[in-house]
Image (cartoon, rainbow, N blue to C red):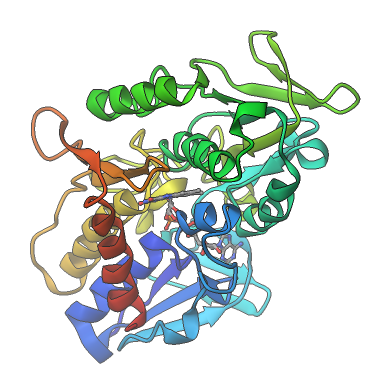
Length: 376
Ligand SMILES: Cc1cc2nc3c(=O)[nH]c(=O)nc-3n(C[C@H](O)[C@H](O)[C@H](O)COP(=O)(O)OP(=O)(O)OC[C@H]3O[C@@H](n4cnc5c(N)ncnc54)[C@H](O)[C@@H]3O)c2cc1C
Protein backbone atom coordinates (compact mmCIF):
# COMPACT_ATOMS: atom_id res chain seq x y z
CA UNK A 1 0.00 0.00 0.00
CA UNK A 2 1.21 3.49 -0.80
CA UNK A 3 1.95 5.75 2.12
CA UNK A 4 0.68 9.25 1.71
CA UNK A 5 3.17 12.04 2.34
CA UNK A 6 1.77 15.51 2.88
CA UNK A 7 4.28 18.33 2.51
CA UNK A 8 3.08 21.71 3.77
CA UNK A 9 4.78 24.54 1.89
CA UNK A 10 6.75 24.59 -1.36
CA UNK A 11 9.79 26.58 -0.33
CA UNK A 12 13.40 25.37 -0.16
CA UNK A 13 12.53 22.61 2.30
CA UNK A 14 9.25 21.42 0.77
CA UNK A 15 10.46 21.38 -2.82
CA UNK A 16 13.73 19.65 -1.97
CA UNK A 17 11.98 16.98 0.11
CA UNK A 18 9.40 16.29 -2.63
CA UNK A 19 12.14 16.15 -5.25
CA UNK A 20 14.16 13.63 -3.21
CA UNK A 21 11.11 11.40 -2.64
CA UNK A 22 10.22 11.59 -6.34
CA UNK A 23 13.78 10.68 -7.32
CA UNK A 24 13.72 7.67 -5.02
CA UNK A 25 10.19 6.37 -5.72
CA UNK A 26 9.17 7.78 -9.11
CA UNK A 27 5.48 7.27 -9.92
CA UNK A 28 5.19 5.06 -6.80
CA UNK A 29 5.58 8.15 -4.62
CA UNK A 30 2.36 9.54 -3.16
CA UNK A 31 3.39 13.06 -2.26
CA UNK A 32 1.01 16.02 -2.06
CA UNK A 33 2.52 19.47 -1.68
CA UNK A 34 0.20 22.22 -0.46
CA UNK A 35 1.24 25.78 -1.18
CA UNK A 36 -0.70 29.04 -1.14
CA UNK A 37 1.35 30.92 -3.75
CA UNK A 38 1.52 30.38 -7.49
CA UNK A 39 5.24 31.14 -7.70
CA UNK A 40 8.45 30.69 -5.71
CA UNK A 41 10.87 33.58 -5.13
CA UNK A 42 14.42 33.14 -3.79
CA UNK A 43 14.96 35.10 -0.55
CA UNK A 44 17.90 36.99 -2.03
CA UNK A 45 15.76 38.16 -4.98
CA UNK A 46 14.06 40.57 -2.57
CA UNK A 47 17.34 42.50 -2.30
CA UNK A 48 17.54 42.59 -6.12
CA UNK A 49 13.96 43.88 -6.31
CA UNK A 50 14.38 46.61 -3.67
CA UNK A 51 17.52 48.06 -5.26
CA UNK A 52 16.03 47.94 -8.77
CA UNK A 53 18.31 45.19 -10.07
CA UNK A 54 15.31 43.03 -11.06
CA UNK A 55 11.58 43.57 -11.40
CA UNK A 56 9.18 41.72 -9.06
CA UNK A 57 7.82 39.84 -12.10
CA UNK A 58 11.28 38.72 -13.27
CA UNK A 59 12.14 36.91 -10.01
CA UNK A 60 8.97 34.77 -9.89
CA UNK A 61 9.40 31.06 -10.61
CA UNK A 62 5.88 29.73 -11.33
CA UNK A 63 5.00 26.44 -9.66
CA UNK A 64 3.40 25.22 -12.89
CA UNK A 65 7.01 24.26 -13.77
CA UNK A 66 7.46 22.27 -10.54
CA UNK A 67 6.51 18.88 -12.01
CA UNK A 68 7.85 15.62 -10.53
CA UNK A 69 6.76 12.01 -10.90
CA UNK A 70 4.61 10.95 -7.96
CA UNK A 71 4.23 14.52 -6.67
CA UNK A 72 0.94 16.43 -6.80
CA UNK A 73 1.10 20.20 -6.37
CA UNK A 74 -2.03 21.73 -4.83
CA UNK A 75 -2.41 25.50 -4.68
CA UNK A 76 -4.49 26.05 -1.55
CA UNK A 77 -4.05 28.01 1.68
CA UNK A 78 -3.67 25.93 4.84
CA UNK A 79 -6.05 27.14 7.53
CA UNK A 80 -5.69 24.44 10.21
CA UNK A 81 -3.36 21.57 11.09
CA UNK A 82 -4.22 18.65 13.34
CA UNK A 83 -0.84 17.03 13.97
CA UNK A 84 -2.22 14.19 16.11
CA UNK A 85 -4.58 13.08 13.32
CA UNK A 86 -2.14 14.18 10.57
CA UNK A 87 -5.04 16.05 9.00
CA UNK A 88 -4.82 19.45 7.32
CA UNK A 89 -7.64 21.82 6.43
CA UNK A 90 -7.25 24.19 3.52
CA UNK A 91 -9.31 26.63 1.51
CA UNK A 92 -9.98 23.64 -0.80
CA UNK A 93 -10.94 20.91 1.71
CA UNK A 94 -9.13 18.45 3.98
CA UNK A 95 -6.06 16.29 3.39
CA UNK A 96 -4.91 13.32 5.46
CA UNK A 97 -1.48 11.75 5.54
CA UNK A 98 0.63 8.90 6.85
CA UNK A 99 3.61 11.28 7.03
CA UNK A 100 3.19 14.99 7.57
CA UNK A 101 6.04 17.44 6.98
CA UNK A 102 5.62 21.05 8.04
CA UNK A 103 7.77 23.23 5.78
CA UNK A 104 5.80 26.48 5.99
CA UNK A 105 8.80 28.72 6.70
CA UNK A 106 8.61 31.80 8.91
CA UNK A 107 6.06 34.58 8.82
CA UNK A 108 6.40 38.21 9.91
CA UNK A 109 4.77 39.72 12.98
CA UNK A 110 4.75 43.40 12.03
CA UNK A 111 2.48 44.30 14.93
CA UNK A 112 5.24 43.26 17.37
CA UNK A 113 7.06 46.48 16.37
CA UNK A 114 4.51 49.28 16.80
CA UNK A 115 4.78 51.79 13.97
CA UNK A 116 6.69 49.52 11.60
CA UNK A 117 3.79 48.89 9.23
CA UNK A 118 2.75 52.56 9.11
CA UNK A 119 6.06 54.42 9.38
CA UNK A 120 8.74 52.06 8.13
CA UNK A 121 9.43 49.70 5.25
CA UNK A 122 9.98 45.99 5.80
CA UNK A 123 12.05 44.49 2.97
CA UNK A 124 11.73 40.77 3.82
CA UNK A 125 8.64 40.06 1.68
CA UNK A 126 8.26 40.53 -2.06
CA UNK A 127 5.48 43.09 -1.43
CA UNK A 128 7.71 44.97 1.05
CA UNK A 129 10.75 44.91 -1.24
CA UNK A 130 8.56 46.15 -4.11
CA UNK A 131 7.40 49.10 -1.99
CA UNK A 132 11.00 49.95 -1.01
CA UNK A 133 11.85 49.97 -4.70
CA UNK A 134 9.34 52.84 -5.12
CA UNK A 135 10.46 54.71 -1.97
CA UNK A 136 14.26 54.63 -2.45
CA UNK A 137 14.56 57.04 -5.41
CA UNK A 138 12.97 59.79 -3.27
CA UNK A 139 15.53 59.36 -0.47
CA UNK A 140 18.51 61.65 -0.95
CA UNK A 141 19.41 63.12 2.44
CA UNK A 142 19.29 62.42 6.17
CA UNK A 143 19.63 59.34 8.35
CA UNK A 144 18.76 55.86 7.06
CA UNK A 145 18.36 52.92 9.43
CA UNK A 146 18.53 49.26 8.53
CA UNK A 147 17.01 47.69 11.63
CA UNK A 148 16.12 44.23 12.92
CA UNK A 149 13.25 43.72 15.37
CA UNK A 150 13.92 40.29 16.80
CA UNK A 151 15.91 37.09 16.75
CA UNK A 152 15.96 34.57 15.15
CA UNK A 153 15.42 35.97 11.66
CA UNK A 154 16.03 34.59 8.16
CA UNK A 155 19.43 34.81 6.55
CA UNK A 156 21.50 36.51 9.27
CA UNK A 157 23.74 38.34 6.72
CA UNK A 158 20.83 39.90 4.76
CA UNK A 159 20.53 43.13 6.85
CA UNK A 160 24.31 43.67 6.52
CA UNK A 161 23.98 43.08 2.80
CA UNK A 162 21.14 45.61 2.68
CA UNK A 163 23.24 48.29 4.42
CA UNK A 164 26.15 47.72 2.01
CA UNK A 165 23.87 47.74 -1.02
CA UNK A 166 22.24 50.95 0.24
CA UNK A 167 25.67 52.59 0.51
CA UNK A 168 26.48 51.56 -3.05
CA UNK A 169 23.05 52.68 -4.34
CA UNK A 170 23.34 56.14 -2.73
CA UNK A 171 26.96 56.52 -3.90
CA UNK A 172 25.95 55.76 -7.49
CA UNK A 173 23.26 58.42 -7.25
CA UNK A 174 25.82 60.94 -5.92
CA UNK A 175 23.93 61.56 -2.64
CA UNK A 176 25.83 59.34 -0.20
CA UNK A 177 27.57 62.38 1.38
CA UNK A 178 24.21 63.81 2.43
CA UNK A 179 23.02 60.54 4.03
CA UNK A 180 23.97 58.54 7.12
CA UNK A 181 23.50 54.78 7.38
CA UNK A 182 23.06 52.95 10.71
CA UNK A 183 22.68 49.18 10.95
CA UNK A 184 21.00 47.81 14.12
CA UNK A 185 21.50 44.07 14.75
CA UNK A 186 20.42 41.96 17.75
CA UNK A 187 23.53 39.78 17.31
CA UNK A 188 27.00 39.93 18.86
CA UNK A 189 28.59 40.12 15.37
CA UNK A 190 27.17 40.46 11.84
CA UNK A 191 27.36 36.69 11.16
CA UNK A 192 27.95 34.90 14.48
CA UNK A 193 28.58 31.59 12.71
CA UNK A 194 31.71 32.98 11.05
CA UNK A 195 34.30 35.23 12.71
CA UNK A 196 36.06 35.70 9.34
CA UNK A 197 32.96 36.84 7.50
CA UNK A 198 31.99 39.07 10.43
CA UNK A 199 35.45 40.68 10.42
CA UNK A 200 35.24 41.35 6.67
CA UNK A 201 31.81 42.93 7.13
CA UNK A 202 32.88 45.11 10.08
CA UNK A 203 35.85 46.33 7.98
CA UNK A 204 33.55 47.05 5.03
CA UNK A 205 31.18 49.05 7.27
CA UNK A 206 34.09 51.08 8.67
CA UNK A 207 35.47 51.83 5.18
CA UNK A 208 32.05 53.01 4.01
CA UNK A 209 31.12 55.05 7.09
CA UNK A 210 28.25 52.76 8.06
CA UNK A 211 27.51 52.87 11.79
CA UNK A 212 27.01 49.41 13.31
CA UNK A 213 25.03 48.92 16.54
CA UNK A 214 25.26 45.33 17.79
CA UNK A 215 23.29 43.52 20.47
CA UNK A 216 20.25 45.75 20.06
CA UNK A 217 16.95 45.49 18.28
CA UNK A 218 14.33 47.98 17.19
CA UNK A 219 11.33 48.03 19.52
CA UNK A 220 9.11 50.68 17.92
CA UNK A 221 8.96 53.45 15.34
CA UNK A 222 7.43 56.63 16.69
CA UNK A 223 5.36 58.28 13.99
CA UNK A 224 5.31 61.99 14.87
CA UNK A 225 9.04 62.27 15.52
CA UNK A 226 10.22 59.74 12.89
CA UNK A 227 12.33 58.08 15.54
CA UNK A 228 13.30 54.44 16.01
CA UNK A 229 13.32 53.31 19.65
CA UNK A 230 15.76 50.51 20.46
CA UNK A 231 15.33 47.93 23.21
CA UNK A 232 17.94 49.70 25.38
CA UNK A 233 16.02 52.99 25.13
CA UNK A 234 18.30 54.58 22.52
CA UNK A 235 16.38 56.82 20.14
CA UNK A 236 17.52 57.22 16.54
CA UNK A 237 15.90 59.70 14.16
CA UNK A 238 15.42 58.50 10.61
CA UNK A 239 14.36 59.75 7.21
CA UNK A 240 14.37 56.20 5.76
CA UNK A 241 13.71 53.03 7.74
CA UNK A 242 14.35 49.60 6.20
CA UNK A 243 13.30 46.89 8.61
CA UNK A 244 13.33 43.20 9.35
CA UNK A 245 10.19 42.38 11.36
CA UNK A 246 9.99 39.90 14.21
CA UNK A 247 9.57 36.35 12.82
CA UNK A 248 7.44 33.39 13.90
CA UNK A 249 5.79 30.36 12.28
CA UNK A 250 2.63 31.06 10.24
CA UNK A 251 -0.70 31.34 12.09
CA UNK A 252 -2.03 27.81 11.35
CA UNK A 253 1.12 26.34 12.91
CA UNK A 254 0.79 28.59 15.97
CA UNK A 255 -2.86 27.52 16.34
CA UNK A 256 -2.06 23.80 15.88
CA UNK A 257 -0.40 23.45 19.26
CA UNK A 258 2.87 22.38 17.61
CA UNK A 259 4.73 25.64 18.33
CA UNK A 260 6.38 26.89 21.48
CA UNK A 261 7.54 30.51 21.70
CA UNK A 262 6.87 30.98 18.00
CA UNK A 263 8.75 27.93 16.66
CA UNK A 264 8.18 24.17 16.31
CA UNK A 265 10.31 22.14 18.74
CA UNK A 266 12.00 19.17 17.04
CA UNK A 267 14.66 16.59 17.79
CA UNK A 268 17.65 18.22 16.12
CA UNK A 269 19.11 15.15 14.39
CA UNK A 270 15.78 13.67 13.20
CA UNK A 271 13.52 16.73 12.74
CA UNK A 272 10.73 14.76 14.43
CA UNK A 273 8.10 16.75 16.30
CA UNK A 274 6.46 15.32 19.41
CA UNK A 275 3.71 13.91 17.16
CA UNK A 276 4.39 10.51 15.54
CA UNK A 277 5.33 10.71 11.83
CA UNK A 278 5.11 14.49 11.87
CA UNK A 279 8.30 16.37 10.99
CA UNK A 280 9.19 20.06 10.78
CA UNK A 281 11.94 21.34 8.48
CA UNK A 282 13.30 24.72 7.43
CA UNK A 283 12.80 28.12 9.00
CA UNK A 284 9.85 27.07 11.17
CA UNK A 285 11.76 24.40 13.09
CA UNK A 286 13.45 25.41 16.34
CA UNK A 287 16.88 24.08 15.37
CA UNK A 288 18.99 26.94 16.70
CA UNK A 289 20.82 26.83 13.34
CA UNK A 290 20.81 29.72 10.83
CA UNK A 291 17.51 30.15 9.00
CA UNK A 292 18.60 29.83 5.38
CA UNK A 293 17.52 27.87 2.33
CA UNK A 294 20.49 25.53 2.31
CA UNK A 295 19.81 24.50 5.94
CA UNK A 296 16.19 23.74 5.00
CA UNK A 297 17.55 21.50 2.24
CA UNK A 298 19.88 19.56 4.51
CA UNK A 299 16.93 18.97 6.87
CA UNK A 300 14.85 17.80 3.87
CA UNK A 301 17.58 15.28 3.01
CA UNK A 302 17.37 13.80 6.47
CA UNK A 303 13.56 13.61 6.56
CA UNK A 304 13.42 12.11 3.05
CA UNK A 305 15.80 9.36 4.20
CA UNK A 306 13.68 8.72 7.32
CA UNK A 307 10.45 8.41 5.30
CA UNK A 308 12.12 6.20 2.70
CA UNK A 309 13.56 3.99 5.44
CA UNK A 310 10.05 3.50 6.84
CA UNK A 311 8.58 2.81 3.39
CA UNK A 312 11.20 0.49 1.97
CA UNK A 313 14.09 0.17 4.41
CA UNK A 314 17.54 1.72 4.15
CA UNK A 315 19.75 4.06 6.10
CA UNK A 316 18.51 7.18 7.84
CA UNK A 317 20.74 10.21 7.35
CA UNK A 318 20.80 12.28 10.55
CA UNK A 319 20.27 16.00 9.95
CA UNK A 320 23.77 17.20 9.00
CA UNK A 321 22.98 20.86 9.79
CA UNK A 322 24.95 22.02 6.77
CA UNK A 323 24.44 25.12 4.68
CA UNK A 324 26.04 28.31 3.51
CA UNK A 325 25.62 32.04 4.03
CA UNK A 326 26.33 34.27 1.04
CA UNK A 327 26.97 38.01 1.34
CA UNK A 328 27.08 40.63 -1.40
CA UNK A 329 29.33 43.53 -0.43
CA UNK A 330 27.56 45.98 -2.77
CA UNK A 331 30.69 46.69 -4.82
CA UNK A 332 30.41 43.59 -7.03
CA UNK A 333 32.19 41.31 -4.56
CA UNK A 334 30.58 38.31 -2.89
CA UNK A 335 31.91 36.34 0.07
CA UNK A 336 30.47 33.29 1.73
CA UNK A 337 30.93 30.69 4.40
CA UNK A 338 30.13 26.97 4.19
CA UNK A 339 28.93 25.75 7.58
CA UNK A 340 28.64 22.27 9.05
CA UNK A 341 27.10 22.29 12.52
CA UNK A 342 26.26 18.66 13.22
CA UNK A 343 28.32 16.19 11.18
CA UNK A 344 31.44 16.21 13.33
CA UNK A 345 32.09 16.63 17.04
CA UNK A 346 32.38 20.41 16.58
CA UNK A 347 30.86 22.89 14.09
CA UNK A 348 33.18 23.73 11.19
CA UNK A 349 33.19 26.60 8.72
CA UNK A 350 35.04 27.26 5.50
CA UNK A 351 35.39 30.93 4.65
CA UNK A 352 35.55 32.24 1.10
CA UNK A 353 36.87 35.81 0.97
CA UNK A 354 34.76 38.39 -0.81
CA UNK A 355 35.74 38.68 -4.47
CA UNK A 356 34.24 39.67 -7.81
CA UNK A 357 34.77 36.10 -9.04
CA UNK A 358 32.80 34.89 -5.99
CA UNK A 359 29.61 36.31 -7.49
CA UNK A 360 29.52 33.33 -9.84
CA UNK A 361 28.88 31.15 -6.77
CA UNK A 362 25.54 32.88 -6.16
CA UNK A 363 24.60 32.67 -9.83
CA UNK A 364 25.29 28.91 -9.71
CA UNK A 365 23.36 28.56 -6.43
CA UNK A 366 20.24 29.92 -8.12
CA UNK A 367 20.79 28.16 -11.46
CA UNK A 368 21.23 24.72 -9.84
CA UNK A 369 17.94 25.04 -7.95
CA UNK A 370 16.03 26.50 -10.91
CA UNK A 371 17.11 23.48 -12.95
CA UNK A 372 16.53 20.90 -10.20
CA UNK A 373 13.07 22.08 -9.08
CA UNK A 374 11.64 23.84 -12.14
CA UNK A 375 13.51 22.25 -15.04
CA UNK A 376 14.57 25.74 -16.19
C1 LIG B 1 16.14 39.17 2.10
C2 LIG B 1 16.44 37.69 2.24
C3 LIG B 1 17.60 37.17 1.71
C4 LIG B 1 17.89 35.80 1.82
N1 LIG B 1 19.04 35.31 1.24
C5 LIG B 1 19.29 33.99 1.30
C6 LIG B 1 20.44 33.43 0.66
O1 LIG B 1 21.22 34.14 0.00
N2 LIG B 1 20.64 32.08 0.77
C7 LIG B 1 19.78 31.28 1.47
O2 LIG B 1 20.00 30.06 1.53
N3 LIG B 1 18.70 31.78 2.10
C8 LIG B 1 18.43 33.10 2.03
N4 LIG B 1 17.32 33.61 2.64
C9 LIG B 1 16.52 32.75 3.55
C10 LIG B 1 15.64 31.79 2.79
O3 LIG B 1 14.78 32.46 1.89
C11 LIG B 1 14.81 30.99 3.79
O4 LIG B 1 15.61 30.56 4.86
C12 LIG B 1 14.21 29.77 3.10
O5 LIG B 1 13.28 30.21 2.14
C13 LIG B 1 13.57 28.82 4.11
O6 LIG B 1 13.00 27.73 3.45
P1 LIG B 1 11.68 27.07 4.03
O7 LIG B 1 11.37 25.93 3.13
O8 LIG B 1 11.79 26.83 5.48
O9 LIG B 1 10.55 28.20 3.89
P2 LIG B 1 10.07 29.01 2.64
O10 LIG B 1 11.05 28.93 1.52
O11 LIG B 1 9.70 30.36 3.15
O12 LIG B 1 8.75 28.24 2.17
C14 LIG B 1 7.58 28.21 2.94
C15 LIG B 1 6.41 28.12 1.99
O13 LIG B 1 5.20 27.92 2.73
C16 LIG B 1 4.16 28.65 2.12
N5 LIG B 1 3.11 28.92 3.11
C17 LIG B 1 3.21 29.64 4.26
N6 LIG B 1 2.02 29.65 4.90
C18 LIG B 1 1.15 28.92 4.14
C19 LIG B 1 -0.21 28.54 4.28
N7 LIG B 1 -0.95 28.95 5.32
N8 LIG B 1 -0.76 27.77 3.33
C20 LIG B 1 -0.03 27.33 2.27
N9 LIG B 1 1.27 27.67 2.07
C21 LIG B 1 1.84 28.45 3.01
C22 LIG B 1 4.85 29.94 1.65
O14 LIG B 1 4.10 30.54 0.61
C23 LIG B 1 6.20 29.41 1.18
O15 LIG B 1 6.24 29.13 -0.20
C24 LIG B 1 16.99 34.96 2.51
C25 LIG B 1 15.80 35.49 3.03
C26 LIG B 1 15.51 36.83 2.89
C27 LIG B 1 14.20 37.35 3.42
